[in-house]
Length: 85
Image 1 (cartoon, one colour):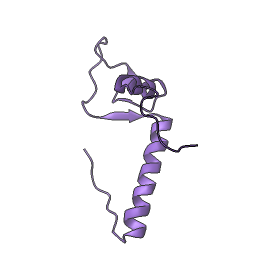
Image 2 (tube, one colour; image 1 turned 45 degrees about the vertical axis):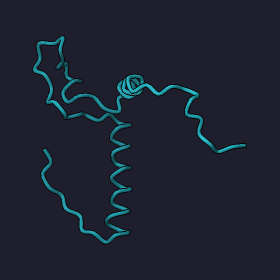
Image 3 (cartoon, one colour; image 1 turned 135 degrees about the vertical axis):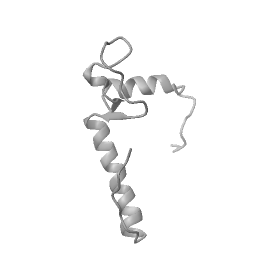
Image 4 (cartoon, helix red, strand yellow; image 1 turned 180 degrees about the horizontal axis):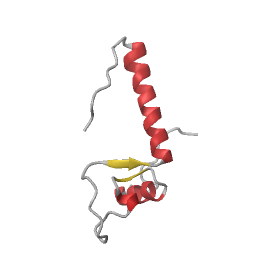
């Protein structure tokens, strides 16, 4: 049995991946969940900002935990918390 990945089994589609992530609420454009959008009279969201759903928040927390484990614990670097915008 081979451990090689078969890259031709299913063609990758960025659009399909984005649709799946939106359906499962990994993320959504900022303020989109409040009705803002092209077909709404509500103001549009902020470009480049995203709201994370429960699975997206969990993924983000796991990525940050691994980052801290590597850079703070293993490399002995100091952690700073600054304004992000």
